[in-house]
Image 1 (cartoon, rainbow, N blue to C red):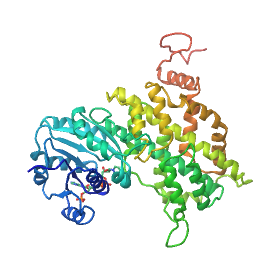
Image 2 (cartoon, rainbow, N blue to C red):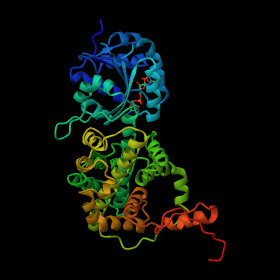
Image 3 (cartoon, helix red, strand yellow):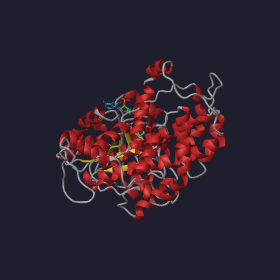
Image 4 (cartoon, rainbow, N blue to C red):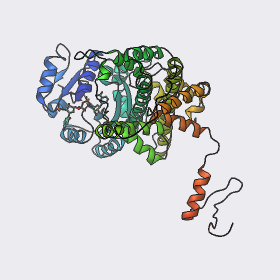
Length: 472
Ligand code: NBP
Protein backbone atom coordinates (compact mmCIF):
# COMPACT_ATOMS: atom_id res chain seq x y z
CA UNK A 1 0.00 0.00 0.00
CA UNK A 2 1.68 3.29 -1.08
CA UNK A 3 1.90 5.30 2.10
CA UNK A 4 4.97 7.53 1.94
CA UNK A 5 5.11 11.21 1.05
CA UNK A 6 8.53 11.41 -0.50
CA UNK A 7 11.59 9.28 -1.25
CA UNK A 8 15.23 10.25 -0.99
CA UNK A 9 17.98 8.50 -2.90
CA UNK A 10 21.61 8.97 -1.84
CA UNK A 11 22.36 8.75 1.85
CA UNK A 12 25.51 10.87 1.81
CA UNK A 13 26.08 13.78 4.19
CA UNK A 14 23.30 15.92 2.70
CA UNK A 15 20.87 13.08 2.04
CA UNK A 16 20.84 11.66 5.57
CA UNK A 17 20.31 15.06 7.16
CA UNK A 18 17.56 16.09 4.75
CA UNK A 19 15.73 12.81 5.51
CA UNK A 20 15.84 13.50 9.24
CA UNK A 21 14.71 17.11 8.65
CA UNK A 22 11.69 15.94 6.61
CA UNK A 23 10.87 13.24 9.17
CA UNK A 24 11.01 15.79 11.99
CA UNK A 25 8.45 17.88 10.11
CA UNK A 26 6.04 14.96 9.90
CA UNK A 27 6.66 13.74 6.35
CA UNK A 28 6.85 9.99 5.80
CA UNK A 29 10.14 9.36 3.98
CA UNK A 30 11.35 6.23 2.16
CA UNK A 31 15.08 5.98 1.46
CA UNK A 32 17.35 4.09 -0.92
CA UNK A 33 21.12 4.09 -1.36
CA UNK A 34 23.30 2.33 -3.94
CA UNK A 35 25.43 0.70 -1.27
CA UNK A 36 23.09 -1.42 0.83
CA UNK A 37 25.17 -1.28 4.01
CA UNK A 38 24.83 2.53 4.12
CA UNK A 39 21.03 2.20 4.23
CA UNK A 40 21.25 -0.54 6.85
CA UNK A 41 23.52 1.54 9.04
CA UNK A 42 21.42 4.68 8.64
CA UNK A 43 18.24 2.80 9.55
CA UNK A 44 19.87 1.16 12.55
CA UNK A 45 21.48 4.32 13.87
CA UNK A 46 20.39 7.83 12.87
CA UNK A 47 16.92 6.85 11.60
CA UNK A 48 16.17 4.53 14.53
CA UNK A 49 12.89 5.53 16.17
CA UNK A 50 11.76 7.68 13.19
CA UNK A 51 9.02 6.96 10.63
CA UNK A 52 11.62 6.56 7.85
CA UNK A 53 11.59 3.26 5.92
CA UNK A 54 14.63 1.77 4.22
CA UNK A 55 14.23 0.25 0.73
CA UNK A 56 16.74 -1.97 -1.03
CA UNK A 57 15.41 -1.94 -4.60
CA UNK A 58 14.19 0.97 -6.74
CA UNK A 59 10.93 -0.96 -7.35
CA UNK A 60 10.35 -1.27 -3.61
CA UNK A 61 10.97 2.45 -3.22
CA UNK A 62 8.56 3.34 -6.03
CA UNK A 63 5.88 1.06 -4.58
CA UNK A 64 6.09 2.80 -1.20
CA UNK A 65 5.15 6.25 -2.55
CA UNK A 66 1.78 7.97 -2.82
CA UNK A 67 1.02 9.28 -6.34
CA UNK A 68 2.28 11.42 -7.85
CA UNK A 69 5.58 10.11 -6.59
CA UNK A 70 8.10 12.63 -5.35
CA UNK A 71 11.67 11.41 -5.37
CA UNK A 72 14.57 13.56 -4.23
CA UNK A 73 18.00 12.56 -5.58
CA UNK A 74 20.95 13.56 -3.38
CA UNK A 75 23.75 11.81 -5.23
CA UNK A 76 27.01 13.07 -6.61
CA UNK A 77 26.54 15.39 -9.61
CA UNK A 78 27.29 14.11 -13.12
CA UNK A 79 27.11 10.46 -14.16
CA UNK A 80 25.57 9.24 -10.87
CA UNK A 81 22.44 11.38 -11.46
CA UNK A 82 21.93 9.86 -14.93
CA UNK A 83 22.58 6.37 -13.54
CA UNK A 84 19.95 6.75 -10.83
CA UNK A 85 17.41 8.18 -13.28
CA UNK A 86 17.88 5.20 -15.61
CA UNK A 87 17.42 2.79 -12.70
CA UNK A 88 14.24 4.51 -11.56
CA UNK A 89 12.63 5.24 -14.87
CA UNK A 90 10.95 1.82 -15.46
CA UNK A 91 9.22 2.13 -12.09
CA UNK A 92 7.75 5.60 -12.61
CA UNK A 93 4.46 6.82 -14.09
CA UNK A 94 3.46 10.00 -15.92
CA UNK A 95 3.06 12.88 -13.47
CA UNK A 96 5.71 11.60 -11.08
CA UNK A 97 8.21 14.22 -9.96
CA UNK A 98 11.96 13.65 -9.86
CA UNK A 99 13.94 16.23 -7.94
CA UNK A 100 17.70 16.60 -8.28
CA UNK A 101 18.90 18.28 -5.09
CA UNK A 102 22.64 17.97 -5.84
CA UNK A 103 25.01 20.47 -7.40
CA UNK A 104 24.25 19.55 -11.00
CA UNK A 105 25.22 21.76 -13.91
CA UNK A 106 22.17 23.72 -15.06
CA UNK A 107 22.60 22.49 -18.65
CA UNK A 108 22.48 18.86 -17.48
CA UNK A 109 19.29 19.67 -15.62
CA UNK A 110 17.70 21.15 -18.74
CA UNK A 111 18.75 18.08 -20.78
CA UNK A 112 17.35 15.62 -18.21
CA UNK A 113 14.17 17.60 -17.88
CA UNK A 114 13.48 17.51 -21.62
CA UNK A 115 14.37 13.84 -21.84
CA UNK A 116 12.04 12.82 -18.99
CA UNK A 117 9.24 14.99 -20.33
CA UNK A 118 8.93 12.50 -23.22
CA UNK A 119 7.62 9.96 -20.67
CA UNK A 120 5.38 12.50 -18.95
CA UNK A 121 7.80 12.68 -16.02
CA UNK A 122 8.38 16.01 -14.33
CA UNK A 123 11.85 17.14 -13.28
CA UNK A 124 12.94 19.75 -10.78
CA UNK A 125 16.53 20.99 -10.49
CA UNK A 126 16.93 22.22 -6.96
CA UNK A 127 19.98 23.89 -5.43
CA UNK A 128 20.29 23.16 -1.73
CA UNK A 129 22.77 25.07 0.42
CA UNK A 130 23.68 24.88 4.06
CA UNK A 131 25.98 21.89 4.34
CA UNK A 132 25.39 19.22 6.92
CA UNK A 133 23.84 21.44 9.57
CA UNK A 134 21.64 23.32 7.12
CA UNK A 135 20.33 20.08 5.66
CA UNK A 136 19.33 18.92 9.15
CA UNK A 137 17.94 22.14 10.63
CA UNK A 138 17.02 24.27 7.63
CA UNK A 139 18.78 24.81 4.32
CA UNK A 140 18.22 27.50 1.70
CA UNK A 141 16.42 25.83 -1.20
CA UNK A 142 16.60 27.07 -4.81
CA UNK A 143 14.09 25.21 -6.99
CA UNK A 144 13.65 25.36 -10.75
CA UNK A 145 11.48 23.41 -13.21
CA UNK A 146 7.80 23.16 -14.16
CA UNK A 147 5.75 25.35 -11.76
CA UNK A 148 3.05 22.68 -11.28
CA UNK A 149 5.70 20.14 -10.30
CA UNK A 150 7.09 22.61 -7.79
CA UNK A 151 3.63 22.93 -6.23
CA UNK A 152 3.72 19.20 -5.39
CA UNK A 153 6.84 19.64 -3.24
CA UNK A 154 6.27 23.17 -2.02
CA UNK A 155 4.73 22.20 1.35
CA UNK A 156 7.69 19.92 2.11
CA UNK A 157 10.31 22.46 1.07
CA UNK A 158 8.61 25.30 2.95
CA UNK A 159 8.50 23.14 6.08
CA UNK A 160 12.14 22.06 6.03
CA UNK A 161 13.76 25.29 4.78
CA UNK A 162 15.61 27.74 7.00
CA UNK A 163 13.62 30.71 8.24
CA UNK A 164 14.88 34.27 8.07
CA UNK A 165 14.28 36.76 10.89
CA UNK A 166 10.88 37.69 9.45
CA UNK A 167 9.83 34.01 9.65
CA UNK A 168 9.65 33.50 5.88
CA UNK A 169 11.01 30.15 4.64
CA UNK A 170 14.17 30.40 2.55
CA UNK A 171 12.71 28.80 -0.56
CA UNK A 172 11.08 30.31 -3.65
CA UNK A 173 10.28 29.07 -7.13
CA UNK A 174 13.00 30.56 -9.32
CA UNK A 175 12.17 29.64 -12.91
CA UNK A 176 11.98 26.86 -15.53
CA UNK A 177 14.46 24.12 -16.45
CA UNK A 178 17.88 24.73 -14.86
CA UNK A 179 17.02 28.06 -13.15
CA UNK A 180 17.38 26.60 -9.64
CA UNK A 181 20.73 25.00 -10.34
CA UNK A 182 21.84 28.20 -12.07
CA UNK A 183 21.10 30.25 -8.97
CA UNK A 184 22.91 27.65 -6.82
CA UNK A 185 25.92 27.83 -9.17
CA UNK A 186 26.09 31.62 -8.80
CA UNK A 187 25.57 31.26 -5.04
CA UNK A 188 28.66 29.06 -4.97
CA UNK A 189 30.61 31.52 -7.14
CA UNK A 190 29.83 34.27 -4.60
CA UNK A 191 30.81 31.85 -1.83
CA UNK A 192 34.24 31.34 -3.46
CA UNK A 193 34.71 35.11 -3.69
CA UNK A 194 33.71 35.96 -0.12
CA UNK A 195 35.90 33.15 1.25
CA UNK A 196 38.84 34.42 -0.78
CA UNK A 197 38.29 38.03 0.35
CA UNK A 198 38.27 36.88 3.98
CA UNK A 199 41.41 34.82 3.38
CA UNK A 200 43.22 37.84 1.89
CA UNK A 201 42.37 40.00 4.91
CA UNK A 202 43.46 37.16 7.19
CA UNK A 203 46.75 37.00 5.25
CA UNK A 204 47.32 40.75 5.58
CA UNK A 205 46.73 40.71 9.32
CA UNK A 206 48.36 37.35 10.14
CA UNK A 207 51.36 37.20 7.83
CA UNK A 208 51.69 40.90 7.04
CA UNK A 209 51.21 42.30 10.55
CA UNK A 210 52.03 39.20 12.58
CA UNK A 211 48.71 39.25 14.47
CA UNK A 212 48.11 35.96 16.31
CA UNK A 213 45.32 33.60 15.27
CA UNK A 214 43.68 34.06 18.68
CA UNK A 215 43.66 37.85 18.32
CA UNK A 216 42.31 37.50 14.78
CA UNK A 217 39.53 35.26 16.04
CA UNK A 218 38.48 38.13 18.32
CA UNK A 219 38.72 40.65 15.47
CA UNK A 220 36.55 38.58 13.13
CA UNK A 221 34.05 37.88 15.93
CA UNK A 222 33.83 41.63 16.54
CA UNK A 223 33.33 42.35 12.82
CA UNK A 224 30.62 39.70 12.78
CA UNK A 225 28.55 41.90 15.08
CA UNK A 226 28.35 44.74 12.56
CA UNK A 227 27.84 45.37 8.86
CA UNK A 228 29.88 42.25 7.99
CA UNK A 229 27.68 39.87 10.02
CA UNK A 230 27.52 36.59 8.12
CA UNK A 231 27.86 32.86 8.47
CA UNK A 232 31.31 32.93 6.82
CA UNK A 233 32.55 35.55 9.32
CA UNK A 234 31.15 33.51 12.18
CA UNK A 235 32.91 30.31 11.11
CA UNK A 236 36.14 32.20 10.37
CA UNK A 237 36.27 33.35 13.99
CA UNK A 238 35.48 29.82 15.20
CA UNK A 239 38.14 28.27 12.94
CA UNK A 240 40.80 30.74 14.12
CA UNK A 241 39.96 30.03 17.77
CA UNK A 242 40.38 26.27 17.40
CA UNK A 243 43.54 24.63 18.81
CA UNK A 244 45.19 21.62 17.22
CA UNK A 245 45.09 18.75 19.75
CA UNK A 246 48.33 17.27 18.34
CA UNK A 247 50.55 20.34 18.66
CA UNK A 248 48.60 22.78 20.84
CA UNK A 249 48.99 25.42 18.10
CA UNK A 250 46.06 27.21 16.44
CA UNK A 251 44.81 24.63 13.96
CA UNK A 252 45.09 27.10 11.04
CA UNK A 253 48.89 27.06 11.56
CA UNK A 254 49.11 23.35 10.71
CA UNK A 255 46.60 23.09 7.85
CA UNK A 256 48.11 22.80 4.36
CA UNK A 257 47.63 26.00 2.31
CA UNK A 258 46.25 24.27 -0.75
CA UNK A 259 42.51 24.61 -1.34
CA UNK A 260 40.29 22.25 -3.30
CA UNK A 261 37.38 22.94 -5.60
CA UNK A 262 34.58 20.82 -6.94
CA UNK A 263 33.59 22.81 -10.01
CA UNK A 264 30.71 25.20 -9.29
CA UNK A 265 33.10 28.17 -9.03
CA UNK A 266 34.68 27.25 -12.35
CA UNK A 267 31.23 26.84 -13.95
CA UNK A 268 30.25 30.32 -12.74
CA UNK A 269 33.32 31.83 -14.39
CA UNK A 270 32.81 29.85 -17.61
CA UNK A 271 29.19 30.93 -17.74
CA UNK A 272 30.03 34.57 -17.02
CA UNK A 273 32.50 34.54 -19.93
CA UNK A 274 29.80 32.98 -22.11
CA UNK A 275 27.29 35.67 -21.08
CA UNK A 276 29.82 38.51 -21.33
CA UNK A 277 29.26 39.54 -17.71
CA UNK A 278 32.42 40.66 -15.86
CA UNK A 279 32.74 38.92 -12.49
CA UNK A 280 36.41 39.66 -11.66
CA UNK A 281 36.12 39.20 -7.89
CA UNK A 282 34.70 35.70 -8.39
CA UNK A 283 37.10 34.78 -11.23
CA UNK A 284 40.07 35.85 -9.13
CA UNK A 285 38.84 33.67 -6.27
CA UNK A 286 38.67 30.61 -8.53
CA UNK A 287 42.15 31.42 -9.85
CA UNK A 288 43.40 31.86 -6.29
CA UNK A 289 42.41 28.29 -5.47
CA UNK A 290 44.35 27.22 -8.55
CA UNK A 291 47.40 29.17 -7.35
CA UNK A 292 47.09 27.66 -3.89
CA UNK A 293 47.17 24.19 -5.44
CA UNK A 294 50.61 24.93 -6.98
CA UNK A 295 52.23 24.28 -3.61
CA UNK A 296 55.42 22.62 -4.89
CA UNK A 297 55.99 25.31 -7.53
CA UNK A 298 55.35 28.07 -4.99
CA UNK A 299 57.77 26.54 -2.53
CA UNK A 300 60.49 26.36 -5.19
CA UNK A 301 59.83 29.88 -6.45
CA UNK A 302 59.70 31.30 -2.91
CA UNK A 303 63.43 30.61 -2.66
CA UNK A 304 64.19 32.45 -5.91
CA UNK A 305 61.82 35.38 -6.26
CA UNK A 306 62.26 38.62 -4.39
CA UNK A 307 59.60 40.86 -2.88
CA UNK A 308 59.60 44.22 -1.15
CA UNK A 309 62.15 45.02 1.57
CA UNK A 310 60.54 45.06 4.99
CA UNK A 311 60.03 48.68 6.02
CA UNK A 312 58.38 50.34 9.00
CA UNK A 313 55.59 48.06 10.26
CA UNK A 314 52.25 49.77 9.66
CA UNK A 315 50.10 50.76 12.65
CA UNK A 316 47.94 47.74 13.45
CA UNK A 317 44.78 49.54 14.51
CA UNK A 318 44.66 51.68 11.39
CA UNK A 319 45.24 48.66 9.13
CA UNK A 320 42.56 46.64 10.92
CA UNK A 321 40.02 49.42 10.53
CA UNK A 322 40.92 49.73 6.84
CA UNK A 323 40.82 45.96 6.35
CA UNK A 324 37.29 45.82 7.72
CA UNK A 325 36.21 48.38 5.14
CA UNK A 326 38.04 46.59 2.33
CA UNK A 327 36.32 43.33 3.27
CA UNK A 328 32.89 44.93 3.27
CA UNK A 329 33.51 46.70 -0.06
CA UNK A 330 34.93 43.58 -1.72
CA UNK A 331 31.99 41.52 -0.51
CA UNK A 332 29.52 44.02 -1.97
CA UNK A 333 31.39 43.72 -5.30
CA UNK A 334 31.11 39.91 -5.16
CA UNK A 335 27.34 40.08 -4.63
CA UNK A 336 27.00 42.81 -7.27
CA UNK A 337 28.78 40.62 -9.84
CA UNK A 338 26.78 37.50 -8.96
CA UNK A 339 23.51 39.41 -9.20
CA UNK A 340 24.57 40.96 -12.52
CA UNK A 341 25.21 37.48 -13.90
CA UNK A 342 21.82 36.25 -12.68
CA UNK A 343 20.16 39.29 -14.20
CA UNK A 344 21.74 38.71 -17.61
CA UNK A 345 21.03 34.97 -17.61
CA UNK A 346 17.53 35.58 -16.44
CA UNK A 347 16.83 37.38 -19.71
CA UNK A 348 19.11 35.53 -22.13
CA UNK A 349 18.25 32.06 -20.88
CA UNK A 350 14.58 32.89 -20.24
CA UNK A 351 14.79 31.99 -16.57
CA UNK A 352 12.91 35.08 -15.38
CA UNK A 353 14.68 34.93 -12.03
CA UNK A 354 13.39 37.36 -9.41
CA UNK A 355 16.54 38.88 -7.87
CA UNK A 356 14.76 40.19 -4.76
CA UNK A 357 13.40 36.68 -4.10
CA UNK A 358 16.86 35.23 -4.68
CA UNK A 359 18.40 37.58 -2.11
CA UNK A 360 15.49 36.82 0.23
CA UNK A 361 16.06 33.05 0.21
CA UNK A 362 19.81 33.53 0.73
CA UNK A 363 19.23 35.40 4.01
CA UNK A 364 19.28 32.22 6.10
CA UNK A 365 20.29 28.59 5.78
CA UNK A 366 22.90 28.95 3.05
CA UNK A 367 26.66 29.41 3.21
CA UNK A 368 26.57 33.01 1.92
CA UNK A 369 23.87 34.16 4.35
CA UNK A 370 24.76 37.62 5.56
CA UNK A 371 23.16 40.68 7.10
CA UNK A 372 23.76 42.63 3.88
CA UNK A 373 21.40 40.32 1.96
CA UNK A 374 18.40 42.14 3.42
CA UNK A 375 19.80 45.37 1.93
CA UNK A 376 20.33 43.54 -1.38
CA UNK A 377 16.76 42.21 -1.29
CA UNK A 378 15.41 45.71 -0.65
CA UNK A 379 17.48 47.17 -3.49
CA UNK A 380 16.05 44.73 -6.07
CA UNK A 381 12.54 44.90 -4.58
CA UNK A 382 12.66 48.68 -5.10
CA UNK A 383 14.03 48.38 -8.64
CA UNK A 384 14.03 44.94 -10.26
CA UNK A 385 16.02 46.16 -13.29
CA UNK A 386 18.71 47.83 -11.19
CA UNK A 387 21.72 48.01 -13.50
CA UNK A 388 24.32 47.63 -10.74
CA UNK A 389 23.96 46.83 -7.07
CA UNK A 390 26.90 49.20 -6.45
CA UNK A 391 24.68 52.17 -7.29
CA UNK A 392 21.88 51.26 -4.88
CA UNK A 393 21.48 52.52 -1.32
CA UNK A 394 22.96 51.82 1.16
CA UNK A 395 25.86 50.39 -0.86
CA UNK A 396 26.59 53.50 -2.92
CA UNK A 397 26.98 55.61 0.22
CA UNK A 398 28.90 52.94 2.16
CA UNK A 399 31.39 52.37 -0.67
CA UNK A 400 31.95 56.11 -0.86
CA UNK A 401 32.55 56.41 2.87
CA UNK A 402 34.83 53.37 2.93
CA UNK A 403 36.78 54.31 -0.19
CA UNK A 404 39.88 55.61 1.59
CA UNK A 405 40.08 52.64 3.98
CA UNK A 406 39.45 50.18 1.14
CA UNK A 407 42.38 51.61 -0.83
CA UNK A 408 44.58 51.86 2.25
CA UNK A 409 44.16 48.16 3.08
CA UNK A 410 45.05 47.15 -0.46
CA UNK A 411 48.01 49.56 -0.55
CA UNK A 412 49.31 48.01 2.67
CA UNK A 413 48.99 44.51 1.21
CA UNK A 414 50.79 45.60 -1.97
CA UNK A 415 53.55 47.22 0.04
CA UNK A 416 54.02 44.08 2.14
CA UNK A 417 53.85 41.76 -0.88
CA UNK A 418 50.68 40.02 0.32
CA UNK A 419 48.64 38.85 -2.70
CA UNK A 420 45.08 40.20 -2.92
CA UNK A 421 43.64 38.80 -6.15
CA UNK A 422 39.96 39.18 -5.24
CA UNK A 423 40.41 42.36 -3.22
CA UNK A 424 42.33 44.11 -6.01
CA UNK A 425 39.88 42.82 -8.62
CA UNK A 426 37.03 44.26 -6.56
CA UNK A 427 38.53 47.72 -6.38
CA UNK A 428 39.38 47.65 -10.09
CA UNK A 429 35.77 46.62 -10.79
CA UNK A 430 34.47 49.50 -8.69
CA UNK A 431 36.84 51.99 -10.30
CA UNK A 432 35.92 50.75 -13.77
CA UNK A 433 32.21 50.93 -13.03
CA UNK A 434 32.52 54.51 -11.80
CA UNK A 435 34.61 55.58 -14.83
CA UNK A 436 32.48 57.28 -17.43
CA UNK A 437 35.47 56.96 -19.74
CA UNK A 438 37.81 53.94 -19.88
CA UNK A 439 40.85 53.48 -22.14
CA UNK A 440 38.97 51.22 -24.54
CA UNK A 441 39.14 54.10 -27.06
CA UNK A 442 42.84 53.23 -27.42
CA UNK A 443 42.02 49.50 -27.67
CA UNK A 444 39.48 50.22 -30.42
CA UNK A 445 42.03 52.29 -32.35
CA UNK A 446 44.60 49.48 -32.08
CA UNK A 447 42.05 46.91 -33.28
CA UNK A 448 41.21 49.12 -36.24
CA UNK A 449 44.91 49.62 -36.96
CA UNK A 450 45.83 45.95 -37.22
CA UNK A 451 42.51 44.41 -38.24
CA UNK A 452 40.38 47.16 -39.78
CA UNK A 453 37.74 46.29 -37.18
CA UNK A 454 36.36 49.84 -37.30
CA UNK A 455 35.39 51.97 -34.32
CA UNK A 456 32.56 54.14 -33.18
CA UNK A 457 32.92 57.81 -32.29
CA UNK A 458 31.71 59.82 -29.35
CA UNK A 459 30.55 62.71 -31.51
CA UNK A 460 28.70 61.02 -34.41
CA UNK A 461 26.85 57.82 -35.34
CA UNK A 462 28.27 55.02 -37.49
CA UNK A 463 31.28 52.75 -37.94
CA UNK A 464 34.57 54.45 -38.83
CA UNK A 465 37.91 53.29 -40.16
CA UNK A 466 41.18 55.18 -40.34
CA UNK A 467 43.84 54.48 -42.93
CA UNK A 468 46.51 54.27 -40.28
CA UNK A 469 49.44 53.87 -42.70
CA UNK A 470 48.55 57.02 -44.62
CA UNK A 471 50.10 60.27 -43.49
CA UNK A 472 47.88 61.77 -40.76
P1 NBP B 1 28.29 12.94 -2.24
O1 NBP B 1 28.35 13.96 -3.28
O2 NBP B 1 29.55 12.41 -1.78
O3 NBP B 1 27.35 11.78 -2.79
C1 NBP B 1 27.22 10.64 -2.09
C2 NBP B 1 25.99 9.86 -2.54
O4 NBP B 1 26.01 9.61 -3.96
C3 NBP B 1 26.05 8.52 -1.85
O5 NBP B 1 24.76 8.20 -1.43
C4 NBP B 1 26.55 7.60 -2.99
O6 NBP B 1 26.13 6.27 -2.81
C5 NBP B 1 25.84 8.22 -4.17
N1 NBP B 1 26.35 7.75 -5.47
C6 NBP B 1 27.55 7.96 -6.04
BR1 NBP B 1 28.94 8.84 -5.26
N2 NBP B 1 27.65 7.40 -7.24
C7 NBP B 1 26.48 6.81 -7.45
C8 NBP B 1 25.94 6.07 -8.54
N3 NBP B 1 26.66 5.87 -9.64
N4 NBP B 1 24.69 5.59 -8.43
C9 NBP B 1 23.98 5.80 -7.32
N5 NBP B 1 24.41 6.52 -6.26
C10 NBP B 1 25.65 7.03 -6.33
O7 NBP B 1 27.43 13.39 -0.94
P2 NBP B 1 26.89 14.76 -0.42
O8 NBP B 1 28.02 15.55 0.11
O9 NBP B 1 25.75 14.44 0.47
O10 NBP B 1 26.32 15.53 -1.70
C11 NBP B 1 25.19 15.17 -2.42
C12 NBP B 1 24.93 16.23 -3.47
O11 NBP B 1 24.65 17.46 -2.79
C13 NBP B 1 26.14 16.52 -4.38
O12 NBP B 1 25.69 16.88 -5.65
C14 NBP B 1 26.79 17.69 -3.70
O13 NBP B 1 27.57 18.45 -4.60
C15 NBP B 1 25.58 18.44 -3.20
N6 NBP B 1 25.83 19.32 -2.06
C16 NBP B 1 26.68 18.95 -1.04
C17 NBP B 1 26.86 19.80 0.04
C18 NBP B 1 27.76 19.43 1.20
O14 NBP B 1 27.99 20.30 2.05
N7 NBP B 1 28.26 18.21 1.28
C19 NBP B 1 26.19 21.03 0.09
C20 NBP B 1 25.33 21.36 -0.94
C21 NBP B 1 25.16 20.50 -2.01
P3 NBP B 1 27.12 5.16 -2.15
O15 NBP B 1 26.89 5.25 -0.67
O16 NBP B 1 26.66 3.90 -2.75
O17 NBP B 1 28.52 5.52 -2.54
